Length: 222
Image (cartoon, rainbow, N blue to C red; front, side):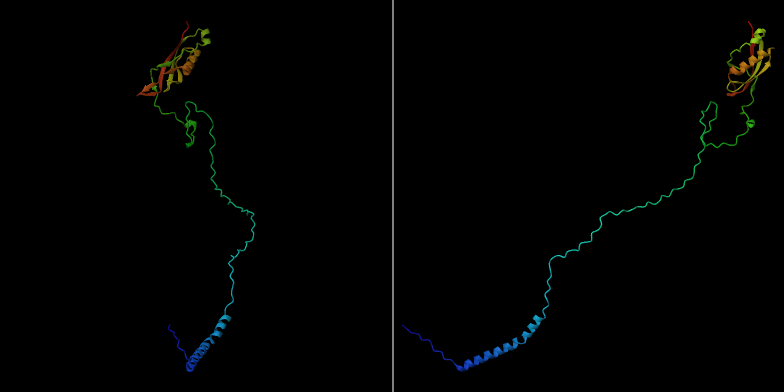
């Protein structure tokens, strides 16, 4: 069995002193470095600003003043309409309500009439001269009534009448061409022809014209 002995260490006083001196120098240098920084740090701490606390609670909007909810009455003023002045229309007087008779002249509305001439100045239509000596053809020739005075007096005879016939066949003038010898018979014949007899119109070149002819009217007792 072997026994191992550890070597015995001997302390060197000179070496210990050198190490201690080096440690002391380093500690002094460290103090020199730390000493100037303390006032600066204190100054920094002293100069730190006050802490401002900011609240995260939302700011409440101020309540607007309560307005009157009563509806406002708005009056609308309509402009006064301008009335356009119209020209006064003069209406013509109403026409008389009369029915047109056959042969009347109907004047259409709006026709401007000229001055009315005197009736004495109105000339009959120019139809030319009547056809004289014409042979008149009867359209209707009823016999006249026998005058009662002539019956009592036994008067009889033939009246020759000169008749002017218009273009429509109506007698417009009757004259005694030759008398029967009795005034009552002549008058009765003339009245009958003028009032009740009709003739066929006389023609000239295809146009109806007035004509004058002689017709007999005979009064005879049985």
